[in-house]
Length: 143
Image (tube, rainbow, N blue to C red; front, side, top):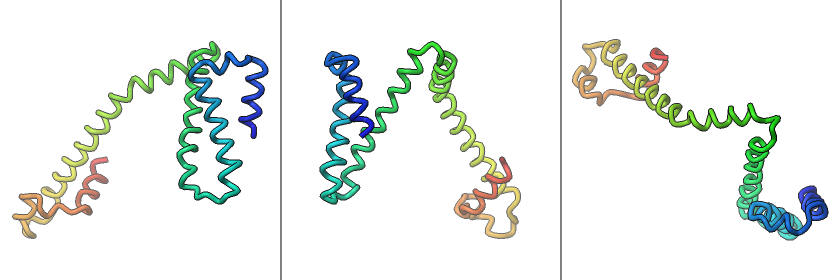
């Protein structure tokens, strides 16, 4: 109901030309589709599984916040932070890959060095005896 009121307020203030922009037209269409689904399909007792797609579409409205951060001068520092985080995502992914690889190496070292050498040495040498408990213990020791 609030979004429909917002739709009419924008229509009154900015006129029909406001909804000629593609982003604003998508926003207006989303408001009407979601409102129609709530008013029509909810009383008919349609399963919530079918309404999840509209919830995902409504989440797209949050991307408008990014435009506000970019345009309003008061949010200049916050926009710089957002750009920094987005720019560093590639580095962060590679850092996580390296950390996982190092943890695996330390887990294998733990299995080879700490495990009793008299017990099943052939399986340890070929890493066939590598169980999840050993990897988890190596992960705990390496971190």
